[in-house]
Length: 398
Ligand code: SAM
Image (tube, rainbow, N blue to C red):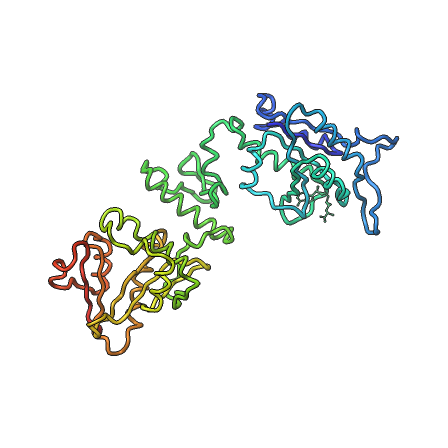
């Protein structure tokens, strides 16, 4: 990967000679060129700034030295053009995702601003006349004196993703932000360490040699740490929903597209293995919409996402029975108690004259049947003769 950096303080970028990035330069993995913007001035004082039009404090970087510096990069190119990154607090936030994206580029150029920034026409020139992709990128919501520190951070984050720069590529996989979570706590020898006041031990699971248990512990630590330090990063599927305060609402036609997706996700296995002729998952949007008038349907949302649903109605020909159907919980939310809570909700909605709840489930769906059993349902005698692939279950209303 080729990287060019233009700055009025080229010596600031000397840190790129050190450690892994320095080694990658020496090994030829990163070809980093640092250029002094003042080399593209023509006056005795090598002036790069002037006062702002319209007044105001501070100075602005003049356009001509920038044009000449960029021309010298692009003009010298035998092939291709760099993607131009201009560090600035008003830009897109730099993060691991952008680092990964930029690590794919064969050539990056960085333009380090100083003072109040660079004359706006330089951006227009770079994008318009030179045809470069120009991104203004911010290191964070604070103001630095110049772009050099931001470039050091970005080049380090991008450079270590270039194959070969970090010796063991596996060490990149589990790091903070790679999959949206922060890293788990890490420990090294000794296993028991006396800090002079307290004897501190490494969590025993890490010494157990049980790799599955270690992986589970680390995952839990990552979720906990992310929730504590960066709640903005935690996906709602990881924190679960508050069963005592479920957001259950009557479904409307606006819910239908998501209901269709949920239906397909929940009955994928059922259809593949058990009931290939059952139409449920193949129902169209129109059929799902029509079902809203035949059934009372409820949906559960968490952070805006539809994660569960159930429907019920009086059973045709058996008006004392409340027929509960299509109890669906998104695959990543199963096992959280949400299904049980939603079942209880559907039961509670039954009209006063209902004396029995009735539902059916796949004959080979042992986990479902266990859940219904725990909720008080019993196999309806003779039901196994009625269906090829399902069983009927009933529960008297108390
Ligand atoms: N007047 C500018 C503004 O308010 O957006 C701030 C200019 S700042 C004092 C000077 C230079 O520092 C910028 O041109 C940019 O190169 C760099 N800089 C400052 N804060 C930065 C940040 N959060 N991320 C990236 N670069 C930053």
